[in-house]
Amino acid sequence: MSPDAALAVREAARQLLHETHAAMREAVGGLDAEALDWRPAAETNSLAALVAHALEAERFLVASAADVAVERDRDAQFRVQVSGPDVLLALIDRRETEIDGYLDLVGAQQLGREVVRPGRSRSGAWWLLHAVDHGREHLGQAMLTRQLWEARERR
Image (cartoon, rainbow, N blue to C red; front, side, top):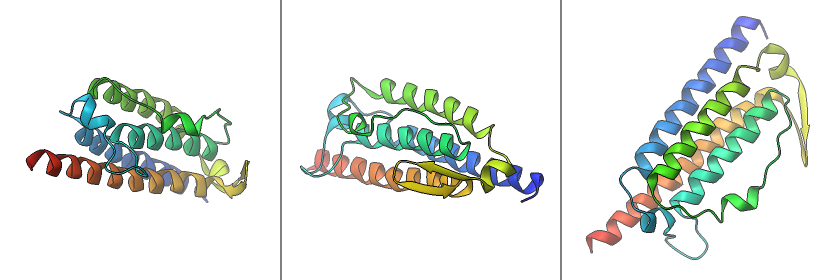
């Protein structure tokens, strides 16, 4: 892959991730702690957990695309509880800045390189595209969770 093509892919991923983060801000904005920590059913996750998990997964996946190993406590993200939207909005801002730093390290060499993480060996390009895909999946779940909360409130 040419350096120009790698730059285009990286910047497209950055734009999509930023769009996801903007939508996350909308999904949590204006809700109180009860709404953010509410789970529609026992086997589902709260808005707070979905956002925390999506952001941490993006951080891990984009760092992997850059071939930078980062520590991760996946289970902790699903136990998160918040005092209000400001906690999540600050988390989105912090993670976006951190993820941007990892994105800055991604070039043609990183996209073409095989990166090994526990249980998987994939190209840097795969790790980067999976970050975008995974974040959007959980954004959709977060948006649906908010809709369910709002429908519950209208009854």
